[in-house]
Length: 117
Image 1 (tube, rainbow, N blue to C red):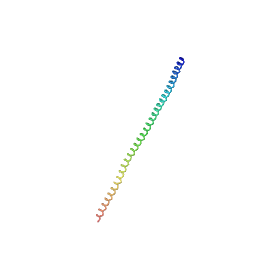
Image 2: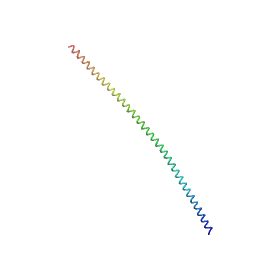
Image 3: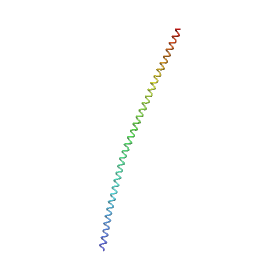
Image 4: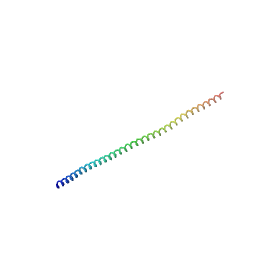
């Protein structure tokens, strides 16, 4: 009976150790799986962050180029307005000068005509 009790106790100890090893392996495996998932998530987040920075840089570059084009077109529009105003002033001055010279010629012609009378 004593031997049977000792064997039963040894079997319980062996069984407990075996179960502990199996449990530790499962825990270790679960832990390593978790570490792997965390590392993969960090790697994914790093790649995503890099992509976001790239897209953000491209958008800012596009906005800057658009603003630069708008600024250039605005300056060109101002230059064109100034040129148009000057051109119109010249045309107006020519018309005024032509009208004045026509009037002056008519005054001279009228004086000559009156002098002949």
